[in-house]
Length: 197
Image: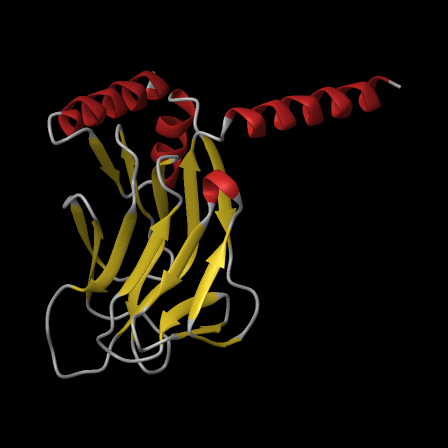
């Protein structure tokens, strides 16, 4: 019975969001996964494992390619997180054109010690946004009927205390190019043949 309620709740959420320019916004990674799976999107997760200071970061290949910057601030990677090097700087993540239809992750504001602070605003280039209390484990996700070109992560409320836009994880969902799908299918066939032997 609870699965039926959950499915009905997700359907209601999807219908409500479709009236708002075809974007579903969710704070549940499970809901994000269900919605992207129902739309036959492929998901790829990215982590930040190479500590250091960077002018920008990039990941993925072809359809799931992305780049991250914080303007002239640069980025710092430590403890599995990427954050703007300067307090108050906005992080922008740009995606491969035309193939990313879902993006989610752990987006928050952190203080000098790296702990969560204040509220965070995550916004799509198309204008839809999500505001949440900062938490290193909270999830925010967008699934759109139109390709997502970029998102920004920034502080919601101005204040004197230093706060840093932070990304703890990144999930990209979309439609691989036809050649990529063929490669994935071939890899699946090879994998299934190996299991049979």
